[in-house]
Structure formats: C-alpha cells, structure tokens
Length: 239
Image 1 (spheres, rainbow, N blue to C red):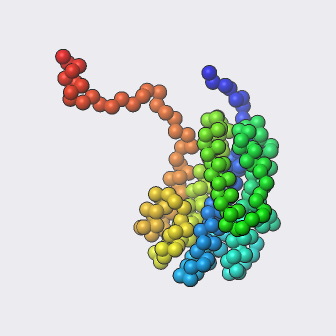
Image 2 (cartoon, helix red, strand yellow):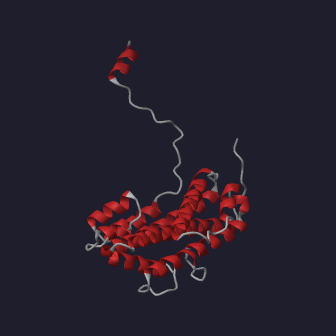
Image 3 (cartoon, helix red, strand yellow):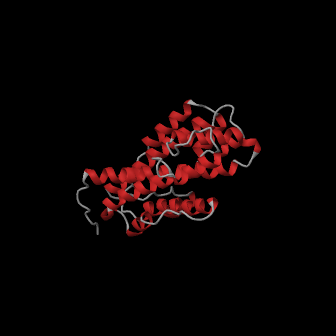
C-alpha cells in the first residue's frame, strides 16, 4: 500500500530545504564551538583557537570581533540571538519553518523543534544537550520521514550545507602548515581526513562538487543481487 502525499507546494519545498540547511549549519557551528572551547585551555593551540573564532565570525555566528576573548566568542556563538547564525538563532529559524510545515514532518520531529533552548546550566552541559538534540534531528529525519518529495528537499538542504561546511573547514584547518590541533577541528569523515593528510587545496572544491553531485536518494534495484554460483553449486546443478 502506497499513500499518495499529493502535490508538494513550492513554499513547502523551500521550507523543508532551508530546514535541512539550518539544522546542518547549527550542528556544524556547535561542533566548532565544542572543539574550539575544549582547545582553548591548551597553550599549544592558540592559532587553532583563533582560526575557529575567525570561522565563527565568517559564519555570522557571532557579532564580536574574531580577535576578542575566545571564551566570549564561543559563548556568543551558542546563544547570541542577535547573530543570524548562532545555534540559538538557527534553531529558532528552524522552529519557525517547522511551524509552517507541520503536516510534512513527523510529530516527534516537531516536538523536538518546539523544545525550549537550554538557557541554564554549565556551558559544557548545554553543549551536550544540544549535541544530543542535533543527533536526534538527524535520526528522525532519516528514519521518520517518508521518502517523498518533501524528504528529498530536506535531504538536499542538508547535503548542500554539509558540503559547504566541509569546504570551509578544510580551507581553514587543512593547509600545508596545519598542526595536529588544526586537523582535530575537521569534521569526522573519511573524505576530510584523506584531504587533510594530502593537504591539497584544489581537492576542497572537488569534495564540495562531489558531495553536491551525489544523488539525494539511492533508488534500489528492482531485482535482488544474486551472488555468483560456486564450483560446488554448479556441479550439483549439473548432476
């Protein structure tokens, strides 16, 4: 039985696309905040911390100058609602989009979008709460959304934003002079690690193009894959 979801309005398609982008961007910025703040106490990671602060400023996650106090910059990137790409601002924008497209998302997904932003508690504890929330968004989007046209736009938004984030991180932290602390800032993916080992800047563009060119939906074959028969099976069949 296949339910026909009907025609997808262009407004809803646009909303789901940007919902995917905002959530993916929020997760990337949170990862940068978590790794940068943990490196701030390392005396050997001064340049890495400054690069992380510059990346947050380039994302427009903070309104503070990138050469300011790293602790203030990381805290602002988390919950400064005046900055357009802080984690708090992105989650608020995602909630606004979700409110206008509730019929296209799972109830659990909306309940998570509607959850209040963690204001109280220690900085590290709030980071862990937000990390779990973004992981839940990814899991619900993958497992609780039907593979309809709406899901394809949502997945497309995530893939585009992920490609841009990986390219930005590689351009900043995977140079020829990159230290071990720099490479620790890179997103955990085989592609990023391979390029970081090579230190090839043109490969950044190639990775972004490959990520965005990858089809958003893998269509399974109508025929199941059949393994080739072994010699023993062939002999039995001939008998």
